[in-house]
Amino acid sequence: MSLSSEFQRLADIVKRLRQPDGCPWDKVQTHDTIKRNLVEETGEFLDALEDRNLEGMREELGDLMLQVIFHAQIAQESGEFTLEEICREEADKLVRRHPHVFGENHAANAAEALNRWEQSKVGEAGEQSRRKSVMDGVPRSMPGLSRAQKALVKAARNGFDWPSEKDAVAKIDEELAETKEALNAEDKNAFTEEVGDLLFTVVNLCRIRGVETEEALHGAIAKFLRRFKFMETETARSGKAMTDNSVDEWTSLWQEAKKKGL
Image: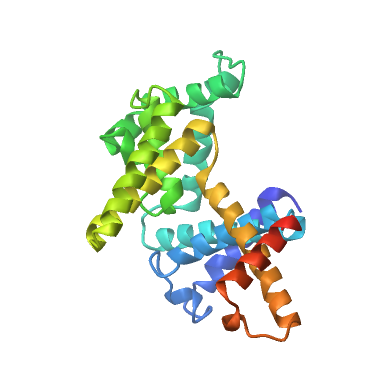
């Protein structure tokens, strides 16, 4: 079967599930009740991607597509918009924002292509009326680190940036000192504010270095999990409970895990 027929088949199945005699669970869902599903399915796809699990990627992309079609079906039933409108508007937008492909304005490299994309966005009437600030394009529902990095990227593109990487590092030192000061003062509210500023400045350094902060943190978490599982296994092998390990024993196990390249 063709792509269009398979896509239509999936849309028809979702529509059938929403009918009065359809699935009791599917037919009572709203945009709000299933919004977390979209986040979860995105996370599951990213897990499969990181594992290079092609079968899992294919399945999770299908689940993501289901979420789009499900929201479109809910919207169509309420007279808000249709799946056809979503597809048409997205296709039109892609053509409009790629003048270097579908027009005469060619791009020599990826950076120039991205610049053409941003210029096309600025020139769109709908974009201008919807967003009063360049920061209006930073979604509230993004994970904190990604949201911070997106905001900082937009600020830098509009001229608000440190003169050098050295200045950005100095700002981290400044925020760390203020965080320690709040910690020593045992002021929870001040500590919360300062540690937030510290995290933000670290994100900015990652942005300057071209590192995705969210990916860097996920890498650190994965490393921590590998080393902890090793310590867990070694502790069990010694016949002890993990809570019985002393600080020195934990340190020794951690160093051993590091030596093993975990």
